[in-house]
Length: 194
Image (cartoon, rainbow, N blue to C red):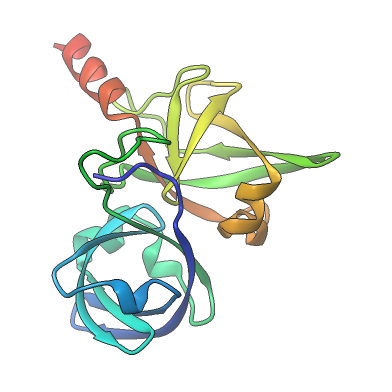
């Protein structure tokens, strides 16, 4: 379980294909503090640390993960949002995030407003995947508040701190991102469909 508050911005050091799997070698300032078997959110995808080599940790994305997320589009040198799993007893500063990506979305617009930004995203419509005004959404692992909620699109407003400390500063229109919808909203949508 994660909170969606990004702890570190890592860099993709190396990508290594092995069959249908992709091993991601990530350099970050928290890599030396990790341990093998630890769950870490990588752009919102919960992955298990399988190796640590000085300031680089290695995780593996299997074919299922690559099909449902944007991890397969990463290139060496790309930034990657990192968050370690939350500890019981810590504050929950974002919202409950599982690290299980529901789908991807494409950035359709970026507007700057004298010190803040509004990013617009569009995703394939699905009755199970919905946003609500002022509800929670996770974009590449970042816990955010939805504004301008529509059927298959929404906006998020980004403060300067989030812009500087996450991948948002590297996004252009067309950027594909990982989305995790609010877990409570997903259960309600499933229940209502029955």
